[in-house]
Amino acid sequence: MKTAARNISPLDRVEPGPGAPVAGVGGPALSASMQRILTLLGEKTPLSPREIARDAFVALTTLEGGGYLRRLKQQGLIRIEGWLKNHNGFTTPLYALGAGPDCPRPRFAARDHDSRGMARIVAALKGKRNLDYREVAGLAEISANTIKNAGYMESLLQQGRIHISAWRRGRNGHLVPLYSGGGGENIARPAPLSRQEIMQRHRQRQQILSGQRSPLSEQLRALGLEAALA
Image 1 (cartoon, rainbow, N blue to C red):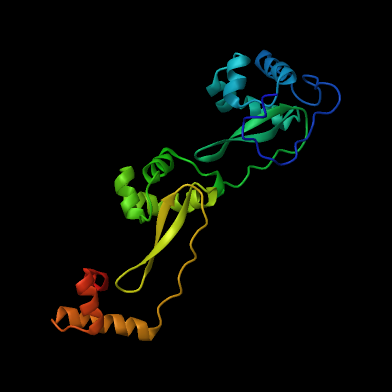
Image 2 (cartoon, rainbow, N blue to C red):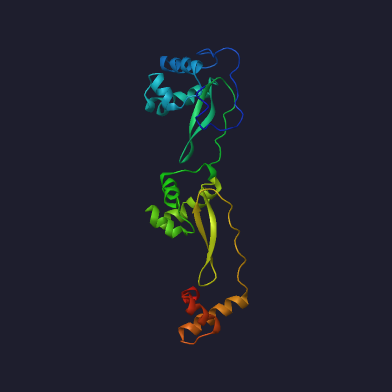
């Protein structure tokens, strides 16, 4: 069966009824090209428009632009049995012989998403730990805006190809997820800072900028970690 590796929608299929459709019954007479399409679908199914064009010896532009598939569907001679998935989603219908309701096109969820860019992100994170999306973008040689706006990291997280291994808190308390390659348990997002903690961090930064030293800043300076307060 050709259906096993074709990423067809898991929705229930409708099997053809007994007997092959008769050309011209209940509708206008069919052309020789349409007869070849029906014969082909009676032998192997489901098939994409490209496969039908190739094996039924019909130009793809004629098959789709000429309305052959639309006319056969209108006469109840063929139906859409499933959808072929590519990196852009479920975009290619797969046709089968016989009447019946068309298989609805599945929604393209994040777990279905894939692209060359995502593969480059996974490769860039291999053996790496605790990188934010901008650092990942630099290693993968992809625009940081592309990674953010295309939702690459969210999709890869849902697919279990990367995981959140830590969080980094920015100057204003904003939390940034840090990623590591491979599957793993995502580290829970830390609780936001309280107003008191935010004010304390602000005072410590001001003390450092003004040249004053708090006990905490002195300890950090001795450890070489004063930049953590910046």
